[in-house]
Length: 87
Image (cartoon, rainbow, N blue to C red; front, top):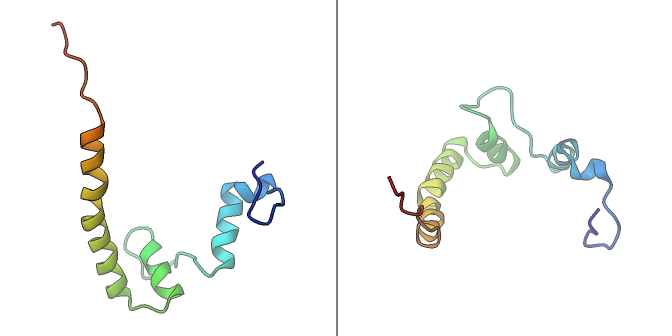
């Protein structure tokens, strides 16, 4: 068990999937059953933060397109190639 910022120990249930879902639900982040395209994550964020759904979807797509090179390029530089094969 790891200590939290308040110095108390987290319970195992808080560190589980059920605990994570309870945390998100407690903060108003739930995926709607209606009006979602794939999983409803962007729709949930849009509803929680009172953002237009189209704006949230465009921002999510732009974020993926913009952030992907920042993750891929360093990995491309840092990750070594396979050793040459003898065959």
